[in-house]
Length: 327
Image 1 (tube, rainbow, N blue to C red):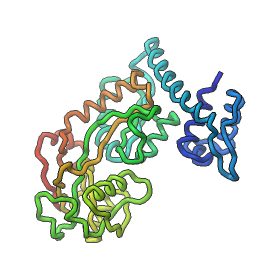
Image 2: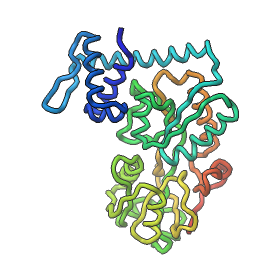
Image 3: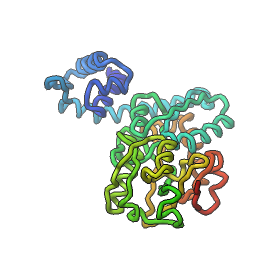
Image 4: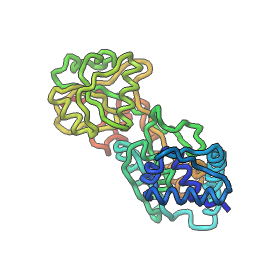
């Protein structure tokens, strides 16, 4: 009998490429990961890892097992959904994760609806970068993720995940109030090609969105400063250190000395936001309720969202046409 938990360790090891990275994702020690893989190897009777110095490589047999592991995990998730018919479908634990603005604008309102409609659901929410959300699903530490679709995200046909679009979040150009473009009703992104840019560092999904949007507009941004949190980004822009793209769902800090300018072009630069669950799990009652609540929150939002003030005003303002905010 194959232990599904050991199969999960193999899947995470394949995802991350090293024992150390897999251990960090699973909250295990590297020795515990190695021990789980050795036991799984004994269970199936074939070698799963080849040691090359300090690194390991999955054997062809391991890749064959992974193909079956995805199918087995999907079937197990479906079995959990079928078993739910024999217990209270209105109770249980439901764990969300999402990137910061997705958590604030979509997950929290959805959770509020769930709390009212299903008060016996135990709801948990966690802020995480988009790439971390996929890990949290894979390790079983989250049930529903709200993610930004980026070039390095798992493809839509990935056997491990079920991704569904929620909303397109247009990008706006944010410039200081005295910037030459500040009095424009809209601009094409290429008009900002010669400016200094403020861009997040590392694996932040918004960095990838900015770089992809600029590349589509025909230029690579000259990155002079790096900041991840919006208050820091806006402070840099306000003081003339550069410009940035900000998603429509992200509110500007109050009294900031910046102008938010909608972008024109076909297509308009935007980030795509999706819900994601483990493949096969979407019919489990708690997860189905959570996905339905997210769809209900996202449905009133038009393709071109208004630049928001406080997050709670996003839904109420959704019927208005887009306009600029200035500090």
